[in-house]
Image 1: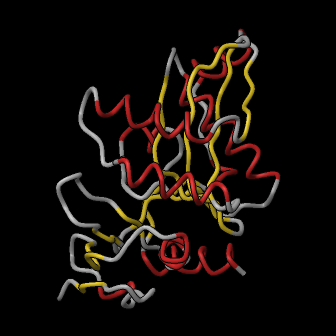
Image 2 (image 1 turned 30 degrees about the vertical axis):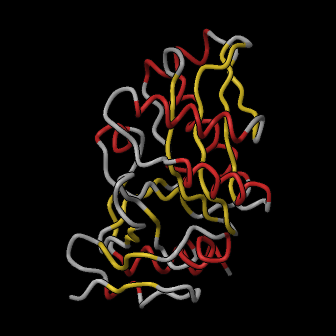
Length: 215
């Protein structure tokens, strides 16, 4: 399958046209309008700093249903022994930058200056959200993602102390379940997210969830 080249017009080819690895298109920009169109169709940007913008739509998806978040026995014990809470949008720019630095200093990151700027702009429009977890009053971790309709599209996480990102994800899932969200889109599989209730689903099932969440 061909990889489509985007121009200045705001458009995407049909998501089903992505290649076997999930790559759909290259180019374009990270404007609010293009990002909203992308996420509303199950497409997201992911690329290395030296590359042009690459747009992905994997055929197999990996999600967490908010009501199916798995909390291990050790994590339940941790949360009983400590005061845990989350704050939404305490400081979006700080959260995305912490996510960037944690990865940049270890395995490398796709969160470039342009990505930080673009998602901060989404946040200003109320279309992206940061989640900061506090344990015993101290910031322990967090995450950020795009929030459209009843779908949360997770982007990246960070931990400053033990179980920081886990606490953020668990408490976020519990909040989203109360608000009848249909999914947390994890984009790619990791063993860590699978241990917390993540599951692989087909593109067809993902598309149905997406349509339901954006209705």
